[in-house]
Length: 337
Ligand SMILES: [Mn+2]
Image (tube, rainbow, N blue to C red; front, side, top):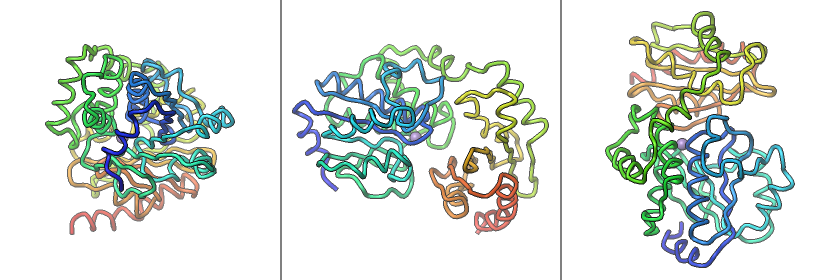
């Protein structure tokens, strides 16, 4: 692994930079990419963001979010942008397989480029020249802040960049409430506030964006679909494609729903199964020492963080849920040992 100082040196000349996020990009991924885009542009580089697929509408307020290239919608343009990159940043993910088809395009590049990973997920693949990786960091946005700091450019952070970094940290910490909320996170947030961001507006933009359909859907899900497994202090819910259709759920409407059961006193783990065209997507959330990363990694081809992980399954929705219920006792026992 090369020293970041060499990278900062390389970036003294104007470069063509491409910034990539993981699939189904969240606020941390998009905020990190857009903050870096602005930063690199201020520094005189050409910087393009490529997302593998759509990001949620509630991130559309982010500065230059309309400039991001969507690989799923415009694969040819994206490949052309990628092919002329001198530097590629991999943001908020740590293995090429996490960006699916876009990762295949990266593998096809036949000219040399400098590669940089900035990420905070556990167990990275070591596939880049440079890494700013720390699984103790709250978010990739926090590491993006550190990156700009290390480059000696904290003064260049403007209001738009600050808002993107702040939103990334806020979303990955559940608005500064999860265990990854360190004093450092608050220090950075304080510095970003000094850059003139409007916190109330950011929170309204990100969180208070429910349509009536989504509000009613959440009611339906909690009333009709949530299953509480009291003896394992767990709760799970599942969403079929037909239900998503019936309630006309938009991209992003399922965000955050997985967390809701954790508001119960006697629940330490919440799981959401979402039926997709070719697989079941699974989100895991937990409180305290309950390590859902272990569950996601060992049973559902996923991973992430101790209290927030993702996975997937090729079984049917019904069989995926069945499998979860089957492995739950084994998992609880592991946790207690
Ligand atoms: Mn993240």
